Image (cartoon, rainbow, N blue to C red; front, side, top):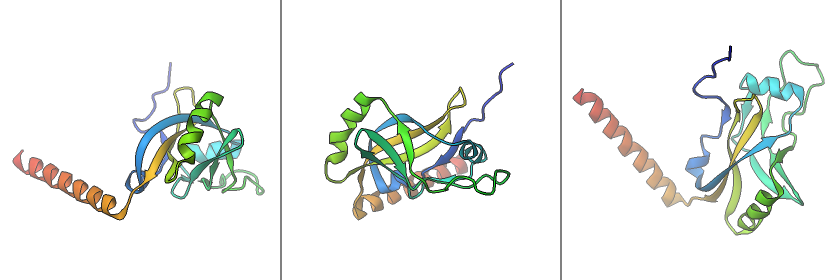
Length: 156
C-alpha cells in the first residue's frame, strides 16, 4: 500500500523569485543535506527568500538557504545558513556556466521539494533581474487578473 502525497509537495517556495526575476529556464538538481536538515525540511521549517546558487570550480552551491534547527535534534545541530552542495551532471553544469557568466543573469532557487522516492530536490531557475518598470507591469497584470476573477465570481 503506497502513501498518498499532498497536492503541494514543496518543503518551501521562493515566491518573490518570479516577481524579481524574468525566468529564462529551469533545472532540477539534488541537494546534499544532513539528517536534521531533512527532518526540518519535512516540517517545512525553511526559507529560500535570500538564497541563490553559485558555480565554484566544478561544483554548484546553494548559498543563504536557511533551514531552521530541528526542534527535537541535538543541541549542537546543523548550521542553519551553511553552504549546501547541489548535485547536477557535469554536462548540465558546463551548459549553465556561460549563461551564468553573462551580465545580469543568475541562478535562483524556486522551490525545494521531495520527489516520489522521498529525495529532496531543488528547482533552480536561470533568471535575469527585472527593472522597476517590468515589476510595475507584473503588478498591473496580476491586479487585472484578480479583477477578471472577481467579475467571473459575480456572474455565477
